[in-house]
Image 1 (cartoon, rainbow over the protein chains, first blue to last red):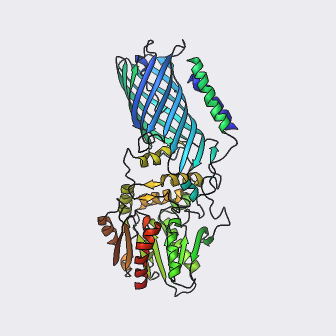
Image 2 (image 1 turned 90 degrees about the vertical axis):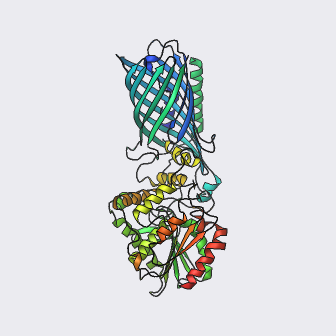
Image 3 (image 1 turned 90 degrees about the horizontal axis):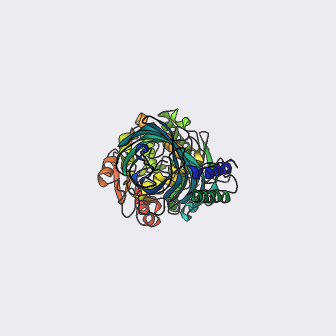
Length: 224
Length: 336
């Protein structure tokens, strides 16, 4: 029941709020007239991944805010069996001289299929980013948590041969979660940002790590 | 924009709300991985050195005993079951899942790591205990048949007890000295960055994470990870490949190996009986040169390359077993 409540809260928060492979912004270069931001990226995040996204700068009058939606997929023979999509918001909460602190909150949907199982998951990704932002460059540190809130398991005939009594269906409470921390940097030319980010990941038990315990991303934003 | 956002939120809410029925835990026994012998009394088991092991034996109890030792650490004997055929040729064929592996009882990681190198003695003693359990008379001959990690374990046992074993059959032991084992592991897992195998192995980490000693979750993740391997030519999605992986013992033994660098070839120079050494054609991490290097530790080794299969196929692939492995095995057994 707790999971329902968390999921509902997440759902309600989703429209106001943006993860690991989220759009990386130079707040000091984001002009009010830059309503639309499209981005493309490539990197390592639980595999070699490619992603695209769209962001819309909202006029809240309170905080600069960018709502975004993203789609990414890992490389491999089957390009359609695994994916991740995110929808959320990135808000610049604090500004002091050239320092900015922003928060991202995203709802996540992901799919993964192997010869043994198909996994679907709804999750969330929260992070905070603190850094120095100048019109032509930025450098920031980030810390976040990527949680798999509820997951659906559907096993293949091959897995059922190993374990005929395997129970398919939705699993809750949360089936997983990983913390991540790292740095991001980039430079801006006119209406483009080129950014690079990277860091490490560890599981929510603070002991174990994912098989690829790091992430890295190279991307570009086009603002208009 | 506001309306669109609200609609998206509602859609997300609806999806999550209607898709859930009741709490279902990843770590409940039987949900994602089969129950072990201590959780399901209906499974065949034996008690060895205080640990309940999944085990079966076939053939006349007084016949020459062939003990089949599975790979891993953390595999199980299901893929070796073709060896049951040896019972039809007058042998007593014994199978067991090592502690913390397959359907045998699970133990905490600290129960291995706290022992250091002595954790390996525990698995040697376990093998001795299995032999003792099934042995019906002191003169009964014992032959070890070990595949991969099982071959390493069998070699270590024969080195420690050269007079107690009357024959040794190994299938692609990755190495015998830790440096060799470590090198083999790296070669056999050197996935291409862009491959499906890599993302099949790594993408799961964002869906499922498990704390230390959460056996059900960790074993399940290892089962998914061990699905297919394009380098070694393994395909554990084929029927009869496995029951259940043992992630904790695997992690623990890899950690012990890294810390203490054991040498499983110690004493094998004293084992003067010829060793039948199988390796496969399709395991790219096990070329002829590697097979010659590893088999060099045995005083007398008869190398046999099995065509058309990868690492596990030597014993698992029915056709290969019947047409290639079994005839070679019978020739060897008759020569002892």
